[in-house]
Length: 365
Image 1: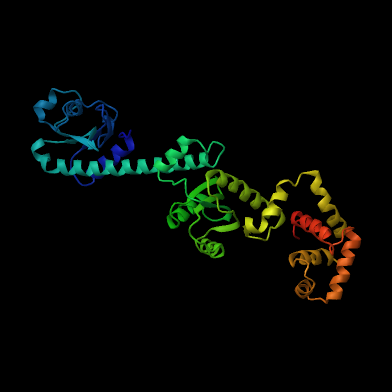
Image 2 (image 1 turned 30 degrees about the vertical axis):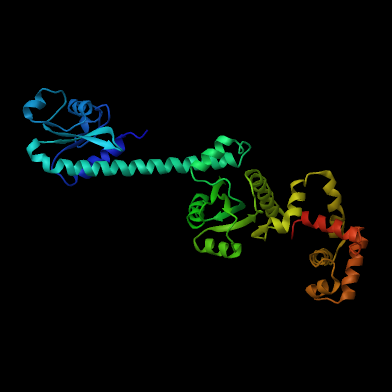
């Protein structure tokens, strides 16, 4: 429940006294002075305010009436309402007949400030609760009916199909600023920042997006995106949680194996990212051993790039030779040398597949 605090009370006092030649006090719902032009009165009880709180109406006190109350000076004390609830008292010090013209205007201004601050607090609470909910929905307990229901009530639309994007920022504004920018331009987006320079963005799947142009726009706005991992469409929260794990693996794969790539799509790198996730498995060492032998024995440094080109062109001799700028006979000679040194034949389907999978785990020089 929203309540007056010292900072807000003093802000009301300072704004009023910048215009009026009278002292102003603001009291809370217990009659305690929270803000005043007379600092020595702060945190003291105001009996005139207690009369207002008891009756819910304006109390005017002339000099004679003020003498009968403790800690009270002549003036006008007015109730402060927020959404129909009495939450405090505004007091102006002076002779009541001189203050009546100003009192209602000051009260109106004070209540406007109260409403504005209340709205800010509500918005801040909503943002924080949405952030907490998203973290829970994307975590292990994300299928809880209570969480899903609360997400619907807050307008998060958990039923929408979404695509996960994971940003790794190198420099510039923090991830939270990027989250605000994305949510303002792509309605119904979800943004969670796992770290200061990392952001998970789950955007609705219904709108097409050119990721290359997006990176260009972000760079113009000051965000240096080191890498962006893009997942697949998730039709449910469970799929979205799996998608988050996939793009996290994909981003780590790109960091270790493809450091020069800024844009990493799960559609393109699904198999390599899956293999990389299990990179510590002894069985995968068998895929890398032929490539380590090849690298160690290749004095010219041509064979590994040739093998990458061969796999990239799906074993198409002419296309691969053209890409390398060599004759098909030279390409065949190099591939025969690969087979000899790696002890795996790239001209055979089984050998090409084995070498291809190994290349996906071998960092690009």
